[in-house]
Image 1 (cartoon, rainbow, N blue to C red):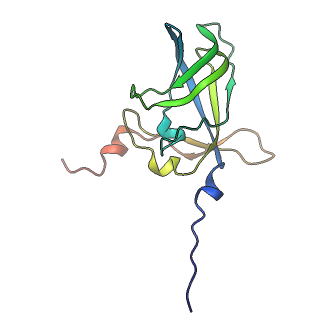
Image 2 (cartoon, rainbow, N blue to C red):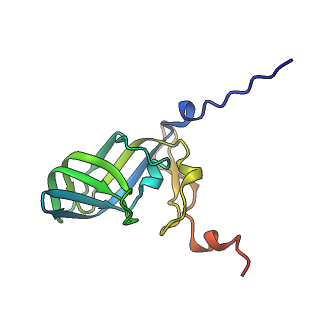
Image 3 (cartoon, rainbow, N blue to C red):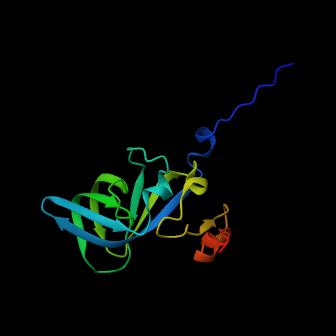
Length: 149
């Protein structure tokens, strides 16, 4: 008898996690405004698609530099494709966090340790306080562990 094997992939895993990233800096260059975050497009969209994922700014109690209006949220890699969100509307302050939704499909397995090791993964069970560590943050030792020097 033939065996049918299905791999639903993204249909099951597309929205299993949120990704939180900290706002490191805000800058205005001419008519363009940029928000630099500690995350990368590789953390949220490893296939480098151009779609904006749903996101929300979580404001921190900090009175640093801020921007309001239309801005691009960019990652730490300094690569031109490291654009996490284009045309974000709102106010963002250094020290805030940005929460991205619909994360999970391939972000854990395809994120390369480019410049920064992968961040930790925290989990929260329903009806519980706090978070539990699911995967610790990678270290440089983890990245180089498989090399033979």
